[in-house]
Amino acid sequence: MKRWITADDFTDLFVKVRQRGAKFFLSKANPNPLKRTQSAFNESAIHSANWWIVPAVRKRWNKLISGHEDINYKQKLMRDYLVDKENLSLLSLGSGSCSHELELAAYPQFSDILCMDIAQNRLDRAAKIATEKNLNNIAFTCKDIHKSDLGKEKWDIVLFNASLHHFYGVRELLETKIKPSLKPGGFLIINEYVGPDRLQYPKPQIKAINQTLQLIPTDKRIRFKTSLRKDRYYGSGWFRMILADPSECVNSSDILPSIHSLFKVIEERPYGGNILMPALKDIAHHFQQEDEKSSKLLNKLFEFEDEFLKNYPSDFVFGIYRKEP
Image (cartoon, rainbow, N blue to C red; front, side, top):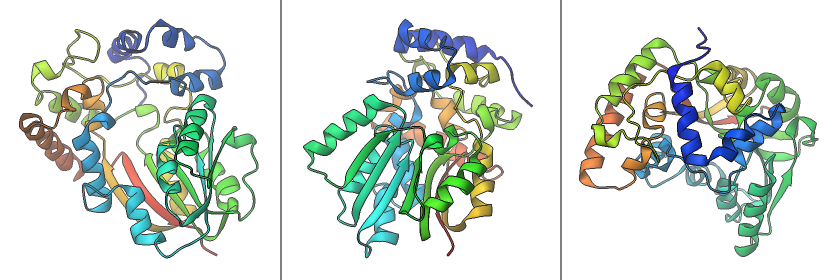
């Protein structure tokens, strides 16, 4: 069931203006959907407080994906699958700031990495970093994937890092563009939100998110750059999602079914986010310091999400899939 408008939509509007300024808000009045999407990623510094800024959360991701909190998914990929390979080619679509691709480019196994995105300024910054690090095996191109020729059986790996959920028609994209571009036996790798379209969480999830908020002391529920306290979560309205970024979670629920029908599953690691992402939105800055008090509270939140995940599928997944010859 769609939630067209919620109380959180109005709160989010106020918070976004406080965090990012009126210019960012006015960018959402652009009638061009692509321009609104670009505005979501064109910030030189994203002034917000989301779950990914919390060190303990990132360690949790690592542990759930690799088995160790200090080994991220790129290190796991190299350790478990690519350590004996050479002259590898990788295409990253919706690469954003390219931090993951720059990390992979430092490995000698890669000879050709191409980052494709619609935000030129983020690609420019990544290119500067690549030059400073003397990484000659990575290139950057500002293009729309739907209008681009990805080649035929050209790539050993195609990577989507937090980007596939921004693409319309996921199955068609994977079937007509991604799969043909991979070499036989090539890998499709995702690190993705695969939950409900437009963040339309079911009622049990909304209830669990609100239960989680009550575990957090009131002083740690003050929203970033405001005096507003986060006492309740109502969810995202469909209209606001489209206005803010027409591509956000547009076809996310179809990601795993489409991949499973087109590729062989090599490894799939769910890492939650059903509770932590919405609960920590706008208040994550309170948990950046790794002190004992924060650690105990976060562990309590982690345990709560783990209990929820015993009965519901994970909203975030790291997966490795193979194109069968």
